Length: 279
Image 1 (spheres, rainbow, N blue to C red):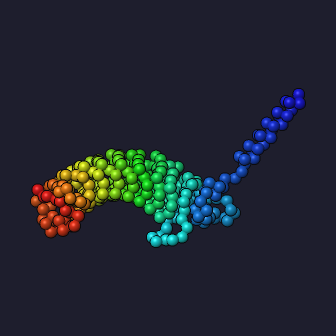
Image 2: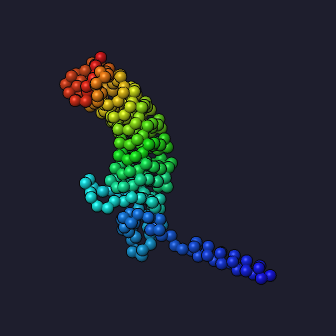
Image 3: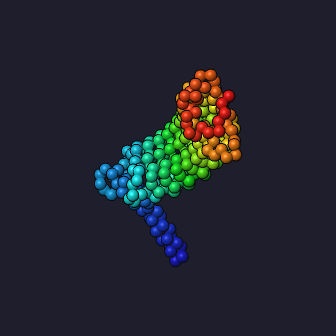
C-alpha cells in the first residue's frame, strides 16, 4: 500500500510539473541564442515587458541585421530563433559570421539576402513565395531551389557548388552563379532569363538558344569550346573567352549578322575576350 501511495504522489508531482511548464507563457527571446540578434529583436517587444509574445512575433514582416561594408565591430554568428517570426517576408543578414541558416519555417519569406557570411548549410524548406535569393560569398557545396518556383533573382556566386537544378525556376530573370565548381549549367527551361553570369566555373558547354530575352551574358573563364548566341537577339553585353590561353585553346563564337557589328565595335574590345574565333 505504501508503495502505491508513493507512486501516486510521484505521478501527481510529475503531472503538476508538466501543467506548470505548459502554462508558462511563450517568450520568443528564449529561442534566440545570439546576444546581438536578441538585442536587435528587443525592438519587437512593443509593450516593454521583457517577453516577446507570439502576437508580437506575428507583427514582424522584415528583419534587417546586415552590416555595412568595412564594418569592424561585433557581428551575429547565429540566427537561431528566426523561426518564431512566422509572418516574415524579408530577411537581410549579409556581412555577418553566420555558419548555418534555417528559414524552412518562414514560409511567407519572399526575399532573403545572406551573402558574405560563412554559411555551409542553408535550409529553405518548401517556401513557394521566395522571389529573391542572394546567398553569394559563402561556403555552400549544394543549393536546392527546385521547390521555389516563384524565384526570379538568384545570386549564388563565390561558393563551392558543383551542380544546380534550375528546371523548376521558370520565372528566373537574373542568375549569377560565377566562381563555383560547376561543370554544367542547364538554363533551357529558364526562358525569361535576362542576365546570366557564370564566369569562373568548369562549364564545358552552354546552350542559350532558349533564352531569347537574354540581355547580358558573362561566361568567361570556363572550359567551353563553342558558344552560339544567334538566338539571343536582345543581347547587349557579352563577356566570353578564356582566362589563360597558354595551351592555345579556342572558343568558337557563332553570331548572326547584326551581332557581328556589336562584336567589332563593342564586345571584342573586352580584355577577357581572348582566344575567341568568330564565325
